[in-house]
Length: 400
Image (cartoon, rainbow, N blue to C red; front, side):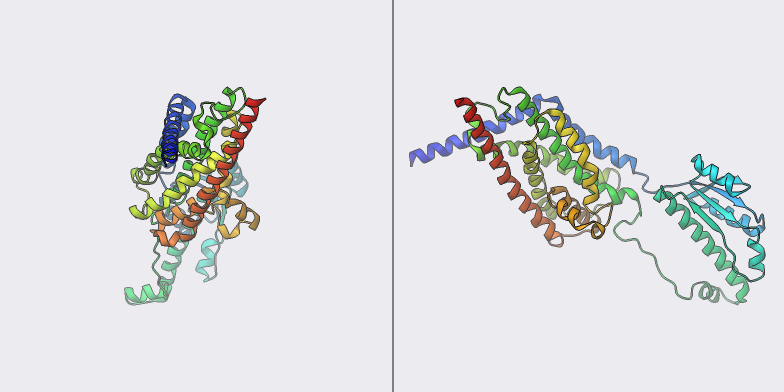
């Protein structure tokens, strides 16, 4: 009994020593501190500040008015009065307008043919051609929607003028026999920041953890004569206490970072945040743990400090795409959907976006929540196996 008690005390003592040693190592390494603290603090602010305008305004558009009539000038005037677009150039032909777009002085072209007003007066359908630079989807959206709104407004006035109604109610029924109300749910602003920032914030947590832990392991390997990431002090011979001690250090740091990223940053920039505190806590707990053990697993393969930076740079954009935020999950090929399940960010982003933007509760993201706990358990045991392999390898090197 005394022997068991002694072993438990020794194990707890080693666990505390490993935790304290990892805290000291982290504090002394400027690179690790940058990725653990400075980057998670500043990156969310940078991304949020870039997208703080939410929507594009005053998109420049070139006009080719071959009609030069009262109706064409009315269309151009209303189009220019929209907050989303502005007329930046008046061209004499499409070739000149094309060159204007090529110089990036405009991102779209409105072409009004010479028979625009005569066709309307003859009660024939008239057309306006709209050319958009499709390499900028937000510009295309602003130009297209503005043109449709102006055309709809002018169509309504023409219908009312020719209907010969007596009351305003008859005019409304003439222009809108079937009316509807457009209500934007979840992303009430229709902004790009509310759309993309929640997913980016979750990815920052995983990628900075991977950077910091990989940098720490790579430094330990470079300094060790045996190429080991475990110090030869006797405290790290126990695999479970080594893994738990180091993970406690990382978890404590990122508990604070996660609270800042998920609760403070969205409110600083007035992004939509429908989080429920208790559900958010229970969801972020397995996400941070799975990111910690996933990073510790991957870091075991890193031999040099620079490798972790290259790894994160290579994977960040693909992981954002695979999460199903910037591209529909149903449109992702089956192989890549399966491949994305290896990363905690996939389930973390999907679950957090629904909780943050749609007000989902923990039960509504049950599949993602269970997947994160499964990843936590799996990556914990994989990390333990890799650390055990390193301990055995170190012992053989000592004997040799």
